[in-house]
Length: 550
Image 1 (cartoon, helix red, strand yellow):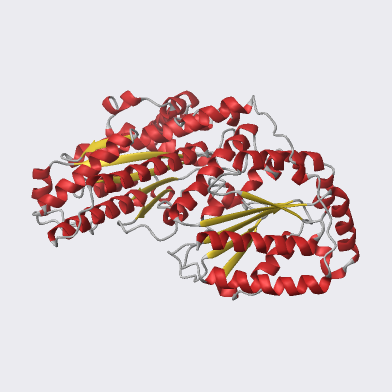
Image 2 (cartoon, rainbow, N blue to C red; image 1 turned 180 degrees about the vertical axis):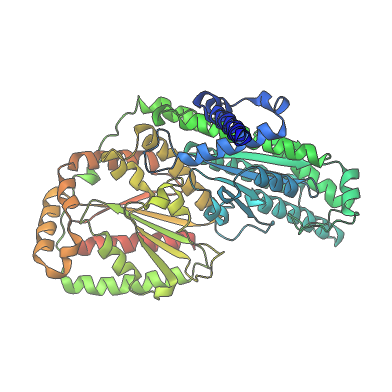
């Protein structure tokens, strides 16, 4: 009996000690210290401490997107880009990371290099793989694999041309292409960071002798990331030349020495830990004061308190009425639709994006209906944009538009996208209804311009319409909808409520036009008090844009 009592007492004491140890690990001060960025931790943490810190940070990051109770900080995700030389320990490092964190919450994607797809920015094919806010995602290959593959192809084609006696592609040509793409990607990644998807870029490197040894060992080699022959010394020299340019032009890469794979794994896991901790630190700051490495973000935050409203153009308020005869309208419409269809089919596969914005009841749906009437439904997609779904809110705000762009990667044959309301919602309804912070919607002007510039640079034709209507005509259309059975569904309580903020929406539209009417994607303002004339004007402008391209 005494032995049993002593045994129970000893067991209880052991349990108490265990509980105290667990409680000590979960003490808020201890947890807080694990979440605080500390670059020196790489030299002071053993493997067990590193593993515990990683899991703690991983779950803290996930908690930023929890719904109940409401999170106290901004939902934030981390995208880890993994690139570099083959056999440098990339796979083993990610494998080690996955063993030390909760593997269910670590997303891993992998691609190998392919030439960029026609008529779309180099980043577009990869946007579906973006992590949700709260997630950590490791992405092997990514857009840098495509970029490196394409530059290697350009160099090799130039060498082949020289060997056959044809003119060689000068080094300056591929180098100019590379630096231009790097600048675009750097800006794209900065915009990701500004929208709560932080980016960690890890470049794994080994020396030539180590590479040679590992290529000739008994271990099976994976599919090569860039589809190049690593045994070819000339190819390796070309790759290192490209790598040097990337690392020189972009100063945010973390270089991991892969000569010692074990040490590379530790270094990589420390870098991921620091990146999660930094993401958590930034997520705790108020949105309007959120600091970021991007100069664009700092500039926009400064502008948030000094924003100057644009002068309202007469085209938004002085809207003339027309009296177009119905029979004349039908005749003109048929002619313009036929010409539009002919031009759209003669564009050679080029991607086209139509963006329609305007006040409620301005005729966006009617204009779109007449535009697509002569086309086969398989030639285009229409996207009616409303409030974002929860999963869309867990990504950068442009993500739901990136993933709807015409895409050569899909099996869908349509290469025309028509948006009934667009990414401009950030600077219109989200601004007016206070659904976005001032710093966010003011920064969005630059982000939208860069997004459209990337599309244009890749060959996509972006055609934007603002359909203008006056307040009295809108009221007449609202009342007509209310009395028409098959149009009642178009009228909502929000439509009536928005009329009370008419002047706010007009000012938001004026600011939007002032900040986003660019050379690569200009706005076309169409007066729509006369629906018939407006539909013809939309077609006229589309025809002119397609002719200019041809």
